[in-house]
Length: 355
Image (cartoon, rainbow, N blue to C red; front, side):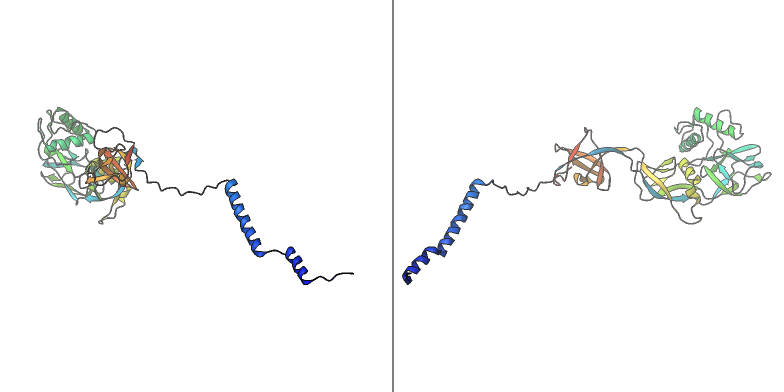
């Protein structure tokens, strides 16, 4: 026979089989703390990434050296004389004439004979104005010597009408059929002065058989090319090139060497210029003597004046330089002192330092 359980006994049995919530929570907290402690003791440590400190830009930069001639193409404006007149210095009768309108007359040749005497066409930078006799000195003699050399009779440009110059003059006269004086004198009356080494005859004023007086016009020439003036003159020490010919440039950018101008006149660019209108010709300008330069960043140069400055070497020595050119983030400088080769300079040196 079964017994009925009392209410008190049921409560005792339930409390033994159940769980207490606070106890459970406490147990979870204890276990978590233990896990953290165990991990800290036994797991490997992980290093956190560090931020690299900022590095100051290098103050030293390597430099290179090169030869620099500054060659570049520029526009040049022709300087053309008005139509020139050619005059005879010898009076008499025109016994022969090779004058033809539209034809060219060159220095060193002859276009006329007066009383059987050939007249020598001669282009000199300074017109001859007197008879040249042994021992004479002057700029007209120098002009003759320069033209003799250009024509293939080389002599020193001494400005003295010496034996060598007289001999070269006699040789030139013989090429046109003239009989030189025994002492080498060059009579002014035998010369027809040309404004350039080659001119184009516009019209002939005298024909064979016509009488002529000293100073009479024998022909008229078209305007002669007297020079080329380049845009933005680079200054002294530069020259202009056209093909294989070159000419020094003066401070105003004028090129006037006769051989150079003759090459320009013979070229297609000059022939293509519009008549009676301004035009330009492309030429190359370059330093007459290429310079050894250092190529440095612009910020490495301390400027002290027009085209002058200094750089600071790696050992902080101030080195004077000429500022030759600057282009495309590079500055070309030339050393002005006897300094051994420089391999590096300081970038952005202290601007308070004076050169």
